[in-house]
Image 1 (cartoon, rainbow, N blue to C red):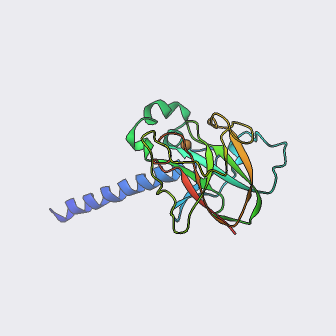
Image 2: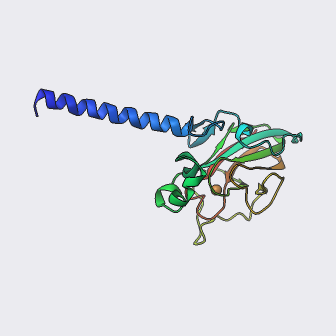
Image 3: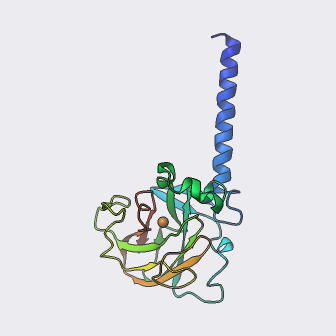
Length: 208
Ligand SMILES: [Cu+2]
C-alpha cells in the first residue's frame, strides 16, 4: 500500500466515523423534533429534555400527585424517521434489540411518586413497576415463551393512553401515568409488551 493510498484509506475511515456520529446525534437529538434527548447512562438510558413537549400534554391541566418521574419509551421506528417507518422496522431483529426506556432520574425520594410514561416510539408501550431483590440487576429477568417477564410482583402500571393506571397500552405520541406509594428500595421499570423487555425496555429506579 502506497503512502498516498493509506492516506485515502484513513480519510475514508474518518469520514465514515463522522457520518456515523452525525447520524447517532440526529437519532438522539434532531431526529425527534421537540422530543427528549436521550443519552447512555450507566446500564440504562436517560433523557435530558422535556418529556411533555412532544406528548401533547395529555395531563397538562392536572397536577399529578407526588414527585413526578418522567419516563420515555423509544423504539427504532421513531428513531429511523418517524412512525411511518414502523412497518419496515418493528418486526426486524435489529429493531427488537433497540427499544428502551429512559428516565429523567435514577433516584427519587420515597413516598408518593407518579411515574409518567411518554411514548415517543412507533408502537404501543407501557410501564410496569417491579421490585428488585438484593443483588438482582435490571435486564436479567427470564423472558417466557410469550415474550414477557413475570409481573406477578407488579406494584402498578401505566398502560392507558392519556390516563392513569391500566389500559390496553400507551399509543405512540401519548402519555400515561401511575401514582404509587413507593418504599425505599430498588425497582425495575419495564415494558412488558411481548418482546419489548428482551429488546431493552427496562430501567432502574432507586427509591431512597
Ligand atoms: Cu414497549
